[in-house]
Length: 102
Image (cartoon, rainbow, N blue to C red; front, side, top):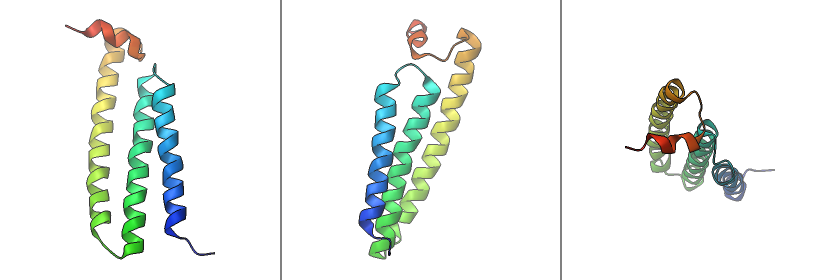
């Protein structure tokens, strides 16, 4: 059985749905929301690399590297904010973040 573009897109759609469902259903834990956001970015990368491979172009793979760079920076900054938030409030629930408004 040969891998086709339909298979890549369907796996990417499943990852996208899992990420969006995690973001919508889990509204309390910041770490879980960041992980679900990473799933969404992973599904976009999978689409880009799959389409790039099947169409014989390189632009999708290059754009995928930029998305991976942005995802790594987002994760590092997000975890730094969560760490500082936990030090101050002793919780990582989003409801406690409303108290930080100036």
